[in-house]
Image 1 (cartoon, one colour):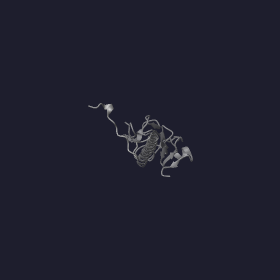
Image 2 (cartoon, rainbow, N blue to C red):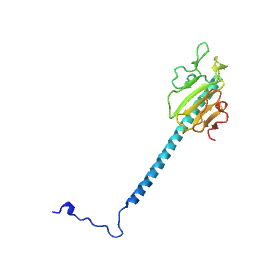
Image 3 (cartoon, helix red, strand yellow):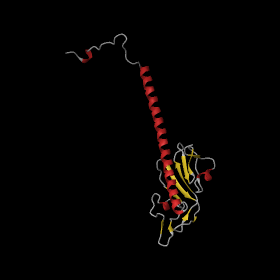
Image 4 (cartoon, rainbow, N blue to C red):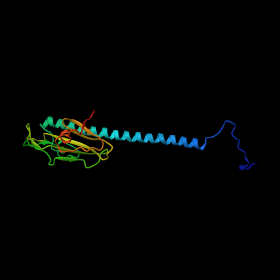
Length: 190
């Protein structure tokens, strides 16, 4: 019986050879470059997804404000009055025809949702007209502020939805996106 170390391995024939160390290192470098490219593409895709989600959120909020404005003759003083997140006091008329609206002009989620913080601010309220004595606002803006400086910030008001490039802050005082920010914003779709 032959011992394992006595077994002779055939030598490669002429023209047949394995990988050299340099060829192996080159192949590994190519694979690493491809993996790095995929990681960068994945990060960009994630940023684009967050931006799209934030834009859709403020657009949806703005659509709700339009509905509210058609019903009550002005925009809601609070997100809660419009039936916003966490609301237990929706805008309703009481028996004596007064609208019940919670106090406080600002609404902030307080939580980061998809990489953004949302803030709703209305303008100064005034007495409206209609079936109820309404306390509504002439203007509003809602901002979605990114928690990093790599993604766009968004703002929506009655004139449309806008964005600021990554790292550019959007102010939020309730008088409308463009009024707050001058020419710093671009309309979504530009």
